[in-house]
Amino acid sequence: MSDSTSLPYSEDSLEYRDLRSILHPATNLATLPVEGPTVRARAQGVHVWDSQGKQYLEAMAGLWCTALGYGVEELAKTAHKQIETLSYSPLFAGISNEPSIILAEKLLSMTPIKNGKVFFGLSGSDANDTQIKLIWLYHNLIGKPEKKKIISRWGGYHGSTVAAGSLTGLPPFHYQFDLPIPGILHTTNPNFYRSGQEGEDEETFSTRLAHELEELILFEGPETIAAFIAEPVMGAGGVIVPPAGYFEKVQQILDYYDIMFIDDEVICGFGRTGQPFGFETFDLKPTTISLAKALTSAYLPLSAVLVPDSIYDVVADGTRQSGVFGHGFTYTGHPVCTAVALRNIELIEELELYQKIKTKSKLFQERLREFEEYQYVGDVRGVGLIGAIELVQDVATKRSFPKEMGAGQKCLHHCVEQGLIVRALGDVICFCPPLVISDSQIDELFDKFARALRATTDELTQIR
View 1: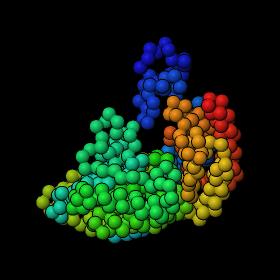
View 2 (view 1 turned 30 degrees about the vertical axis):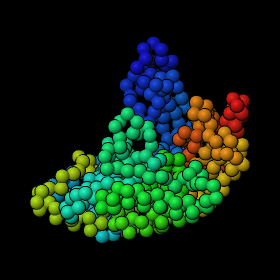
View 3 (view 1 turned 90 degrees about the vertical axis):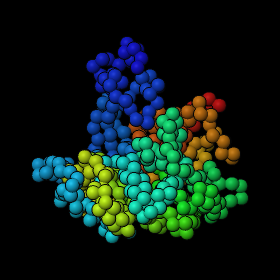
View 4 (view 1 turned 180 degrees about the vertical axis):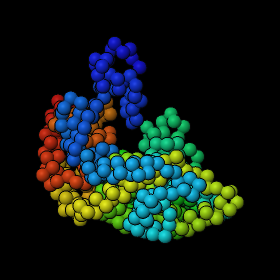
C-alpha cells in the first residue's frame, strides 16, 4: 500500500485503520486509498448511518439480502436464546440439531422439491459449489462420468469461489484468476435491451437465445452436459428480467436433452420478485435450488441447497462403497444460523409480506418507470421490489458513455450526497430495498434519486 503519510486520515481514525488492515472484496483497490472507505456505524429499519453520523435510505438491502431491514429485535432474541441453548453443533457423522431439522422441513414444504433433502452452507458461493459437486458425483454414480459440463450465462452471478466464480459470467471474476475452470460453459444472457436485434420482439428474441443454447449443447454433445444454472432475475449482471417466453423455451430444451436446471434463488428467494420465489414468478421447473441472502435477512451467514430424492438416493447408495459422503463445512447446519433463518421466514409470513409486496411492487415499479423520459436514461427494468436504470450517452442508438467518464459512478456519488444507498454496476443503477420498506419510503427513495439523477445529468452534459 502507499506510504501511510499520504493517507488523508488521522492514524486513530477507522478509515485509516481500515486502509491499513482490510482487503476489500469487489473493490478497486488502486483507487481506494484516494477515495477512502465508508465506515457504517449503525442501522435500523431501512436506514443506515455512517461513522460521521450521516443517515442514508438503504435501497440495496445491503447486498440484495436484508429482507426484513436492520435491527429486528425478534431475530436478535432468537440468536441469543439459541446461543444459550446450543451455541454450536456440527452435522458431520449423523449428528443433528432441532433448528436445522425444522428449517429443512420448512424449506422443502415451500418448494417443488418436497421429496428431497437440504444441505446447509454459509453463502451462495458455497451453495453453488455444492451444486457442482453433487451433480458431478451423481453422474459418476449412475455411470455417466462424461456428463459433467455445466452451462451458465454471461453476466450471471453465482459466487466468487473457484467453481462458483467460474459459473459467474462477469469478466472481473475471471480476469487473471485463471477462471473459468474446464467444464463450465456460458451462453448469451436474456438482456433484450442490449442483445435484441432489429425487428425482434421479446418472443422472437427468446426463441433465438433458445436456439443458441441448443446449438451450444449440440456442439459440446448433449451426453456431456449435466446442468444449466440461472437466476430467475439476474442481479449483479444488471437486473436482467427475462423476456416473454424465455424460460419456457429454455426449459423445453433442457427437458429434451435430459439436462438438469439449477435454480439460483440467492437474490430472488423470499419475496424479491413479488412471489415467495422466482420460480413462481416465472413458472420455472427447477431440478435443484440454491438459497442464501434473504434466508436469514443476512443477520447470520447461511445457505441451502435443495435436492430431490432422485439425486439424494443415488448419492446415499454410493456411500455403501465410499463409506462417507465426502463433502461438508464446519458450520454446515450451524444451529444459531438455522434458528435465525427459521424465525426470519416466520416473521415474513406473520407480517404478510408476500401479500404486501404485491401492492408495494406496483408503486415501486410505477415510480421507477417515471425515469424513462430522462435525458440519459436508456432502459428502465424491474419486477417486484427490484429494478434498474441504465444510463446511456445516446438514447436513440443505445450508445454507452465512454468508460472513462464513469457515468454510473457519478450518479452513485450524487446518490450518496442525497443520503441514498444504491449500487452502480457500470452505468446501470440498481435498486433492491428491504421488503419492509413503506410506501412513503418508496416515494422518499425515488425523490432522492430524482435529485441525484438531475445532478448527474447536469454534470454529464457539462462534460460532453
